[in-house]
Amino acid sequence: MNGYLYDPHTHTAETSKCGHLNAADVVDRYVRHGFSGLVVTDHLHPEYLSRIDVDHNWDHVMDHYLSGYHASKARGDQVGLDVILGAELRFPENDNDYLVYGIDEQWLRSNPYMCCMSAQEFYDKFHDQVLIIHAHPFREGSAPVQETAVHGAEIINGNPRHDNHNDLALALCRRHPEYYRLAGSDTHRDGDEARAGVVLAERVHDSYAYKAMIESGRFHLWSPEFESFVEADEAMRKGEAK
Image: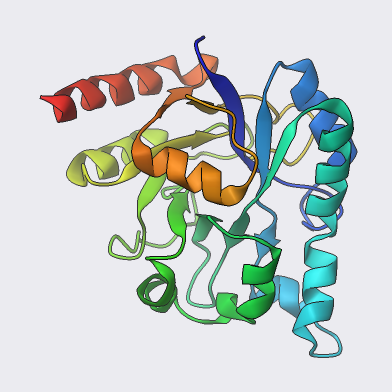
């Protein structure tokens, strides 16, 4: 493998209700698997706000929300793993999830309650600032894909406890060759980690650099378990290059 392996879809127990691994444990697991970095994409959605926003103070919400990232970053700095800030947003209209990259702590604090708009409203307002990737777009229980509200989609979601229908996500990207095609493990608990990721041409140290790397096309997908999807992505790349 030529390049640097990153997982762009991970969660922490400190922030995500469904996370079962604390931040330091997640980082240590990825070090053992030989990764160069990961992106912390903890959940941010109205249900989260209903539990956390008890005093209707966005900065207090962000203090809690960022706790998983901060713990991950502290451990990553200790062991030499790049830890990058992302987010997984869900809007009130349905249960679809959207991975967002190209952000920092100040961006999150400066855009209060952005997860309370619609997916299309979010895209219309922020599409030229951030990279929006539809997470597991055809997972059982998901609503129809809002195809005009994303820059791309996960064609490989490696979470082993869901029927993700990655084949339908690949078909979606065939219909939209302009989409960025991504892969991630969707790590929540033991056994989820290091199942999918992206191989970057260079190491990146923040969300803006990661976004720029994806937008430049200087990456390849990685997933030993979903090798046929990696091969399909490579074939599409060759076709796009002609």
